[in-house]
Image (cartoon, rainbow, N blue to C red; front, side, top):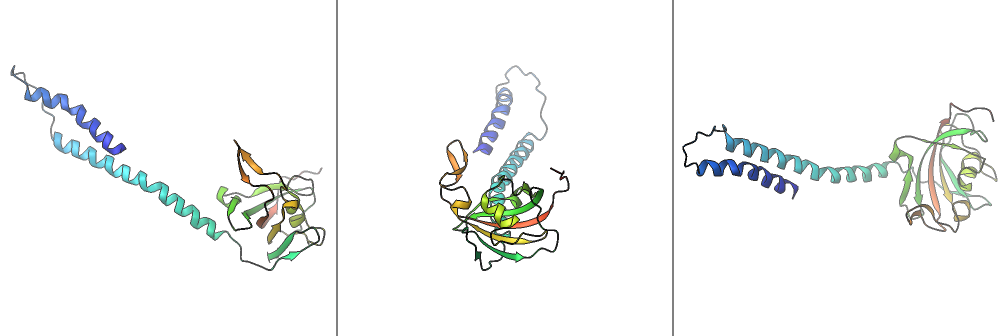
Length: 207
């Protein structure tokens, strides 16, 4: 529709010139525009080509995003459940330092609901999240699942772990991630996190 509108504008722009040529009864010499027809057709072709590219772009972006999300899911593993209700299993056991208490660390994660629908991912933002564990800054399931405790071993740098987080260790009976009345996470949601412990944050300072 936009391309058609632009073409209409082009022809309306040149219409007065064409009209003056046809009604020139005073033998006034009007300078000619060379290759007028070719110029109009050239502009029209350019507009149509640009419109076709713009129309295709959103579809290509959506397809790429869906395919990208499909690649960040870690392989399945058998979950171990501890007394708190948290489930965990190590896809890769890290070989670096253990996660430190109350210090900043960088992690990549993909967060899903129990039905597998992704609701958040650091991979989409192309950078890890910096978080501090053991200080109540994150949900209880991430504190216990990454830092360890209650039967869960602490993660090590380079490790990848899947966490099954029941509502009582997530956001509980209250919805979360709300903006203008719309909430990203419903009440009493069970969450599944694929966590990649990237590194201990280099800017840590002693508390």
